[in-house]
Image 1 (cartoon, rainbow, N blue to C red):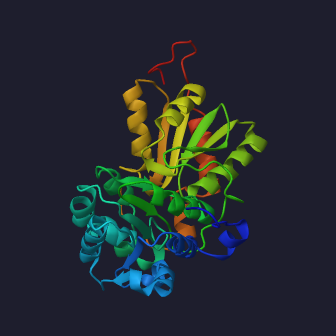
Image 2 (spheres, rainbow, N blue to C red):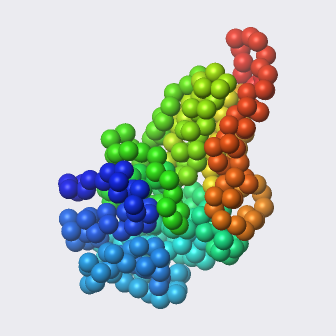
Length: 336
């Protein structure tokens, strides 16, 4: 399936995640005539329109009717096709939540959802177009796989791999030219497995999406200026979460901080906290994201700074967490 699908850092630097997704989907469509595309009158904005132009007989625009969009997708999946549905994250996770849950997840149908403009990436559009609740919603649906790629190269890998993964998949991306972290595809991406960006023994940063690059840059600064050994995990798959990687970090670093472009309730931070709580192990743990409020309105870069999701914010949070004291004995469970 992946034959001939090669992406470079040049592609990722000159195309948005959505544009790369559109190109990859066209390539996949050439190899598999069961792949179809669907849009709710946002084909150009979400870039699935590239697939529609290449395969007009396999593309369906239902108009501004997101609930119908996912209902139609479920019917196409029941007939043996592989629907790729693309619309804004806020419309997917909330306006059509019932249809995603009942029509698709309940029947465990093979529908792939590409949700664009997620998080605060469309920050200047206002609260109605922010989507900082979708990870909490989507990971609560049984049978749903939830992925947040770090950049365009990882986005290409997500789309390719999700075709081979049965059942519904939710892939969450931003709006525009999110910075690229990876230089090529050869870093061991696999759905459900965290990627170790940098190993370390003092503290672990668990990140997804746009925060991966920021955490990686912060780790370099902290090593050079503070002498800290900082582990950075790209937890691109929120569900199923890589529990082994989380527990390895807890046991080896004892300090965990999560960073996500999402409400601190219900997303990556909550998923990691559930694993730690279930284990019975004690550690210093904090979550960084959008606090329990509606995101303020502004340009994405300004919002990331405002909420401590940029490199400076990561550095500052790590320094705070490193001040937490532990009891000095070998039995450190529940002794933070």
